[in-house]
Length: 216
Image (cartoon, rainbow, N blue to C red; front, side, top):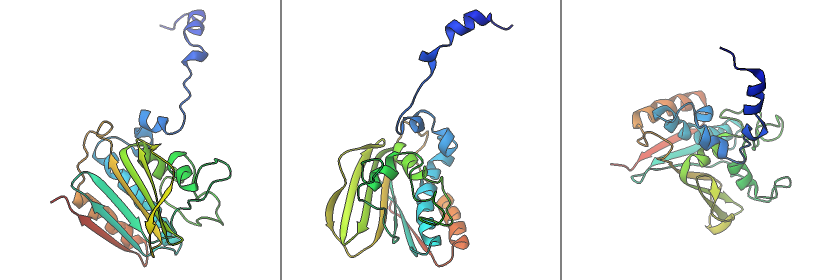
């Protein structure tokens, strides 16, 4: 039976409209971004970070991607691409790295003739979603002879981007630990990862994908 319209109007008002900011929508409704919070969604975190590296490979800037599973639940994805920019972003006032990792729909995949001509993943959403759904997240960028690092907890920066060392490498390394308050399981399947990444290697020419499992 339909309620009286006058009473409905009184029940439903502006105070019922929620405005979620930053990465809060991802933690409120993770299924909208990664499908679910079980095994499929858990592994989707890896796919999103790997897709960013694959995009670098497709663009011709990366030929090596290394994924490592650790005993403590961390996963790292490292590539030898260009490295995420770390300088200040004009529009956000934050570093480009923090912008990419904390703002939905921020990335280099929207301007066709600039960042990437072809791209997979969630188009500027993937890395920030993984950050939001991780209890701990560490981004390291190898550029200009320096190692830049920024740490996060559930998507919240724990400090500014800082130089933590010197290097001859170029690329990006993302390490994250899935939040066990979000996911029903945090146990990764090596078989599932191998199967998915074999397909990626087959579809992406001239890229070598290495997988390390240090859990056992």
